[in-house]
Length: 132
Image (cartoon, rainbow, N blue to C red):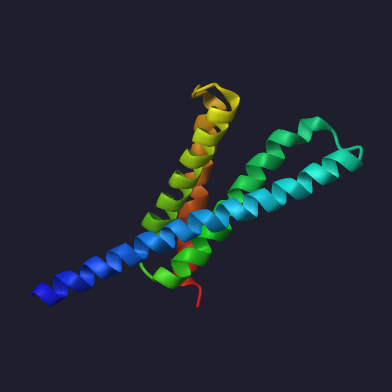
């Protein structure tokens, strides 16, 4: 009985590490894509009105990629693990932006971004679990 409990504990801690890797992967993808977008924005005539939609798209793609890569190695509970990756990613980004901006406000844009993050994570989780 003790052996089953220890195996389950090791498996759960391994999943937590994989979820953390998914968040890190998502953050790295976000930083790379935002850097590329900043270069394009700087050296082209692309208007600043594109910033909002591009940030939403980059966030969704980053979470989708990170959660699908992670859940493909976990092989179970794709929706749950992907949703956790999306939610945690969005909370980290929200806290960082609030600290750097000295403003902890929760508006409709923030709520929409959190929702998009969770949904993108869930979709990525489904894709990752079912991708062979």
